[in-house]
Image (cartoon, rainbow, N blue to C red; front, side):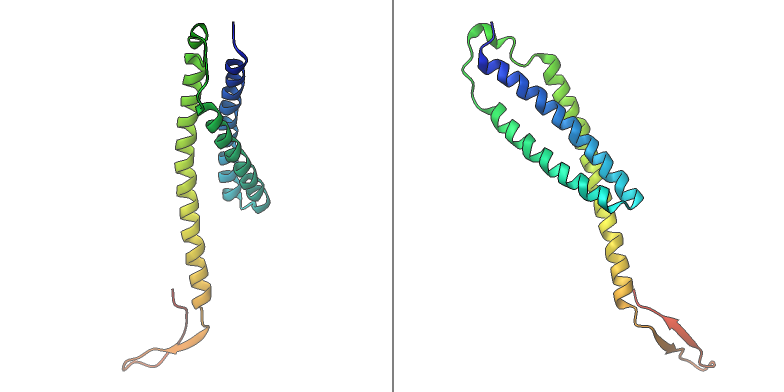
Length: 142
């Protein structure tokens, strides 16, 4: 016979698992939005990621709180299948998070390079030096 606390934890564990999977989907969606340069979709994904992360944090705190369980309920609290699914989903999410972080870092560097290129563009003519004829060249500094 389950106590209400154990049943509640099972529901929260199932929600936690689903939230991990939803967050993984949002990371994939965000990466695809970056690749397609779809800013609105990317911003929407970021908002959903924030919401999911907040809920995951709440669920993690609730699930880690001590629970008074009767001895007969101890064997049934979070069966191995649920624990394995949570661990697998967490592993997938960690790998996606590394890819996502690398993509964002690479994108940030690209944006910084482009900003540097355009901000340092002075649009001035420079004369070649030396004994040859002086040629005018168009240049920008990077």
